[in-house]
Amino acid sequence: MDIIRNKEFGGERPLFESHNLRLEYVAILEGESGIKECSNIECDHCRFEGKYPLWHVEGSVISNCYFAVGSRSAIWYSNNMKMRDCVIDGPKFFREMKNLELTNVKINDADETFWNVDGLIINNVELHDGTYPFMGCTNIKVDGLISDSKYVFQYCKNVEVRNAKIVTKDSFWEVENVTIYDSVIDGEYLGWHSKNLRLVNCHIGGEQPLCYAENLILENCTFDKECDRAFEYSTVQADIRGSIKSIKNPASGKIVADEIGEIIIDKNIKGPADCIILTR
Image (cartoon, rainbow, N blue to C red):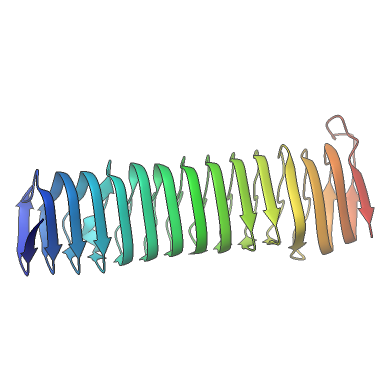
């Protein structure tokens, strides 16, 4: 593997069609497509300032690097990438990719980041600001996530989330085959139109959670006091610890809680309209 150290590159495509290359303390300055159509690339302690620096890269390890605001849309169409100990200030990262793994990465503008990634592993990652991260991703494993971005995990399939703290709204919309363990999810309209969404040992905040859900399961979960009109038109099996403010028109299943403030069953309920609701 060739090594380049302590160099600066600018302009358009300065390292185009590079292969088997390691970059150490290299700066990719203003310009476009610094590392494009490349393979087997390692970047350590590098700085990326120009646009689209890592496109169509096959096989890469990115460590201890910084991506400035100007490096927007930095990493698309690049497969088999591992990134660790990096800071990202640019938006619209990681799109149309396969097999992406991030460890100890902080993303300060997560706007439209992680779109259509198949095979995504997240370990101790922070997402801040922006909208719609994880849109359309499949086969995701998360262990350690802090996020205040809006509209996270929409239209995702085959997802496992552990040890997350997510403050958002409209999260996990139209997802399929998702399990969330030991996490806090705070924001309105959680999990609407989902299929096979399971929450285990989770704390839920926000208004009107978990409506229009199909085959929804809650195990040993708790709710904030403002969580009203939960489970509307959902088929659900729920074990709720503590109290829940209100439950409205669940379609079917069984809901058990220590305390229920209000049960709303009205003429608008949808069939089969046979949900069993109990307090312990």
